[in-house]
Structures are given as structure tokens and as C-alpha cells.
Image (spheres, rainbow, N blue to C red):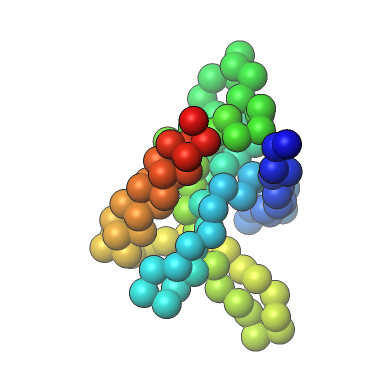
Length: 109
């Protein structure tokens, strides 16, 4: 039995909606992060390079195309995703995310 992937829509600054698969949630230094994989090749935060490839098979996601957002709970209870702009934070979180994705891939084999 395969696990159903969670797909969430994100809206860019122009109001365009793009769908992302949630690959993982994790915490670093009391901050929450999400690893998302864009389903559309033209998503502003990443996307598939090879449009000829059937890449939307469940669990078939390239770690190089995944994006990481900081997850922040708003005052009204709404969950918001923030782009990580601090280079030091990015390096720390990206390394952990990469290891988590590798660990997940190895466990599925």
C-alpha cells in the first residue's frame, strides 16, 4: 500500500497558483521547516527541468528540485511559508534537509 502524498497550493506574488508535494516537515533550533516539491516546471520557487519525463509518479521526486521553506504560524492561526533568506540559516537547514531526503530514499529501497 502506498502512502498518499499531500499536495498543497502556493500562490506567488502575481496571484498565480502552483501545486507542491509535501516531502517532509522537520525542526531545527526551534524553527519549523517544510521540504516541498513543485509539480509545475514553471513554479517560481523551483521546478522540473525535463518536461519529457514522467516525474509525477508517487515518491519519484528529485531532491535537487525540492525547495525548503520556513513554516511560521500566524497570529490568526494561519500557517505561512517563508523563503529562507539568511545564508547561514540556509546552509544549516539545507544540509539537514538533504540528509533527511537521503535517509527517506534509502528506507524506501
